[in-house]
Length: 328
Image 1 (tube, one colour):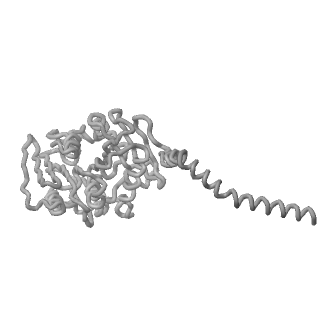
Image 2: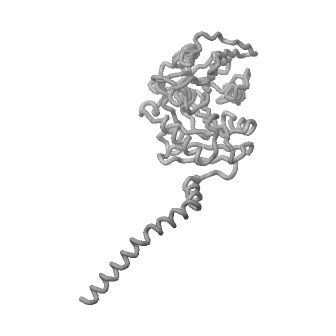
Image 3: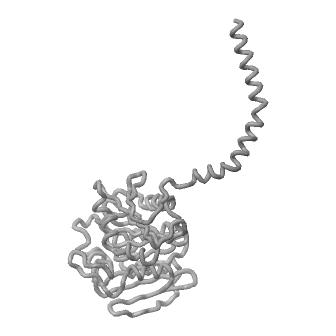
């Protein structure tokens, strides 16, 4: 009994001491946090995967979606850099996009970061991937894949790794990837400073952009996949159920003239050997259509793909990047 009383009395004395000392302890803690705590806060906010050098990095997000990040040596790490998201065509993948369309070289030349996202694929390596652009295409559309959510998560991840200029985030894509670019302009106009689509028209189900947004569309008259006059060509897909009756180029431009309030603006026409450039512009934004006479369903200025020769009337990469920067 005596031992128990001694223990209780000792605990009571210790508890009274803690009560008296608590304000002082809290004060010391607040003083300590006022200095090193800012360092503590910085440490907590410092991205654990922040990049320290230029290069190419395959990234897998928490939901297993993937993208390829290319940082050229012409980008100064630690300073805000422009960012381009390039979306491959239906049936492609991120590596194929990086190897095919020349964006690494363009990023080297102009000094911007380029990301090659991978579309939805049931295959472990991400091949034969598609994008949910609204009415097209493939499994991504049929399974209602949340590609808008994927793009948002991807951007958040990139911003943890690099300092990105929020005023210079752009999107471009080929075919089904171009269609997704149109959808991004519709649903993420506050994020993107402009989009450029090649051989992929606006096939969104609905579109209410929050602001006027610069749009560049490039299309060949003899495209046999996404027909210039509308509809799916004979080369679009072996399984017709995986595509749609594509919107025509004329209807795509008409929609964007309305959305960007350019209905009353006449086109400025520039003729090039093998191509025509139409530009609609007001004080708020620009809309441009580049029509090539030949090239089919391909990327103008690139190397031949499966024996088909792309149009050489323009270099799509240069046209796109200069359009984004307002230089042409």
